[in-house]
Image (cartoon, rainbow, N blue to C red; front, side, top):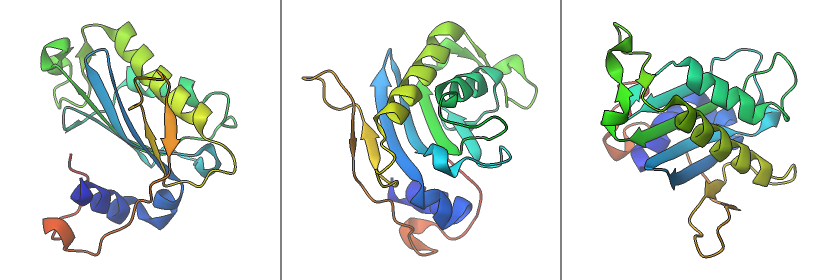
Length: 173
């Protein structure tokens, strides 16, 4: 996980890291984890939006819609959220042959996927406070209370070459 943190820091820079909250949530046979930025870090373009499905980069309208909907009450019109998110799920629940370059997929249960992404991000955003520092951790690991809570955890950039990362560049899952 540390090498993934280092790649995100190297790829998107200190401003992203300073405004990012770490996310890890499991439910409905899926796991969503990664980083989402606070609304105060909204961008004028969608240049810092990375989504991976089972380790593969993905550009999908359903995913974009769910993320946009989660941020709808906290972003000004024309602004775009920044995130690096990883969705893990049973490969049988998705058809990867919907696009020649496999950048788009066809989910077998699109409503369930959309709702999972939207609700997870919406709850995480609702639990962040304007005074809360970024680079925290939002996790759903409190089943006894059945609620989600942010946990402060700093994300630090590792020096180039740390954790076996030899500066190959690019975002790899």
